[in-house]
Length: 149
Image 1 (cartoon, rainbow, N blue to C red):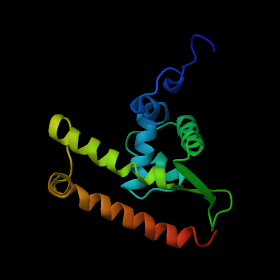
Image 2 (tube, one colour; image 1 turned 90 degrees about the horizontal axis):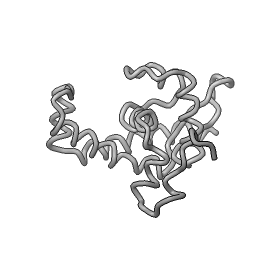
Image 3 (tube, one colour; image 1 turned 120 degrees about the vertical axis):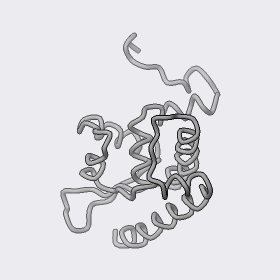
Image 4 (cartoon, helix red, strand yellow; image 1 turned 30 degrees about the horizontal axis):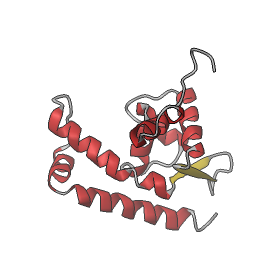
């Protein structure tokens, strides 16, 4: 391994946090998972439209990384054969708890966070409702698209 190549934490540690950060330790992976969980995004072009401005090469790399980590999978788009639809695996869906916890922490501790009032209220008073709604929406999407493939 070259000096510039990053050695995975799992080669050095048994710590579960270290292992998890090998997969989702970069902000782009978490934002892609957020987009899928909370915003219902499933297509490459939809991820490109996120306000954080991910580059095409980074997006392609992170999608491959998340597929290899078994957090997401893809199917061919039913209407456009040259496009893919990405969806979360059970392990990917389980990240909803991490995403909601991160958002809640940031809302409580970072002055730079500005949520729409309705979302802020849900996050502060009913985070479980956010989780349930997101998982329900994912199930509905899967019933529509994964049954066809």
